[in-house]
Amino acid sequence: MKKYINLSKSIILVLIIGILLAACSKIKYSEYGLDSDSPITITVWHYYNGAQKTAFDNLIVEFNETVGKEKGIVVEAFSQGGVNDLIKILKDSAMQKVGSNNMPDLFATYVDTAKEIDNIGLLASLDKYYTQKELSEYVHSYIEEGKFDEDKNLKIIPIAKSTEVLMINKTDWDEFSKATGATEKELSTWEDIANVAEKYYNYSGGKAFFGRDVMANYILIGSYQLGHELFKVENDEVIINLNKDAMRIIWDNFYVPFVNGYFGKYGKFASDDAKTGDVIAFIGSSSGSTYFPTKVILEDEKSYPIELLVLPLPTFKGTSRIAVQQGAGFAVTKNTETKEYASTVFLKWITDADRNLLFSSQSSYLPVKTRANDYEYMINLLKVKEVNITENVEKTLNIAIEQTKTYELYTSKAFSNGTEARKILEKSLLNKALEDKEKIKKEVDLGGFKERIIEKYSNESFESWFNELEKVLNVTIYN
Image 1: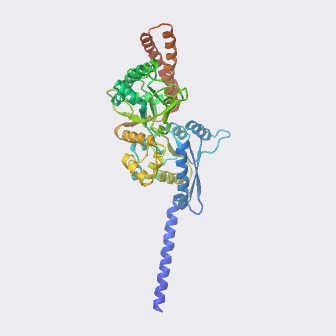
Image 2: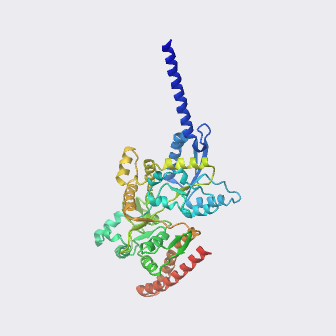
Image 3: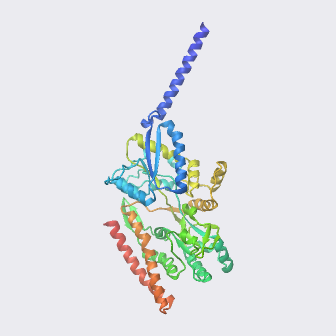
């Protein structure tokens, strides 16, 4: 009889332990009000398309079937088109414009847009949902970028980043190099690239060597390389630091080779110009390597295959190695603690070092955790997980990851009307160069001496361009 009593006690003890464990599990997953029996839905807006959207959608499915199911979180993601489409939809929602949708719980954003929405009081501070240990695992500058308000509250979590690199049609470069003796070492500074571009122009019978995307980065990073941060933000106030000597160096190494025909801009993107053979080198985002052409298609429909050569971002002679840090992060709309916490659960899950590396590498983006920013680590993980990436993506990430370690990564801080200021930088120098190139051509066609005409235009146009740029930036930022 005693034996049966002891057995009953044991069974009861096991049941009690089971109940306690279940209760503990329930408490764990009901933190901040989460309940696996009554899941909440988190809506996500982003601008991903193509390979990145596919990779992101697959992660959403995995999260919902695992951690989301355990904790009571269902994530629903919606692509809003391109970056500019997303910005417009977000601003319309934030301002509660007629016909706009409610703000999502979580959304992809750049700092300038996030600041505008934060100024309305709609962004959640994420500090209380992250420990210092968790934050220390991220690349430091990526986290700091998300602390843009006056109190340095964390408002954006990085998901995938990129920088700029020099992409070259290696096939045509090798032929040019063999014929002229030009070397890759000559592509490390802007001054040398201008010289190489002139050589290529003469070698090719008048074709441009170089083009670039995102002129705003050339001016912002160039000015910073030359020792002058163009937009200095202190105590939430912006100071325009437009140094004339630095701007002249920037001008001379773009405007002059451009109006000479050594640089070119024909299609919407520099990769378009590489595809038609109108340029053989360009500066582009590391995340854009998936768009580098595999062949050049000529006007007569003939084509030939090409290889990609990737080199680090050039600097001005005698300056520090500085490159742009870019790429949107995710911000959380101010809501109940339950929804805010649920959003951070998903953000922590998707930025797990290995998971984030796999997501990033498939779309040529840079991972956001320090441990994952290692080329050998990436290659080994891809092999273990049996994930294939293209040769162009692998080449690009090899250089881009190394660049994050050996360059200072810079992004201008957020300020009111920052997006509009960047748009001005994007168009001002390029538009002036395009406009003057046509005028110079007409004068040369009439019998003018090209070198003298270009020198005259360069000096006069620089003065007018600089003065107009200074004026327009002041009006845009301070009015």
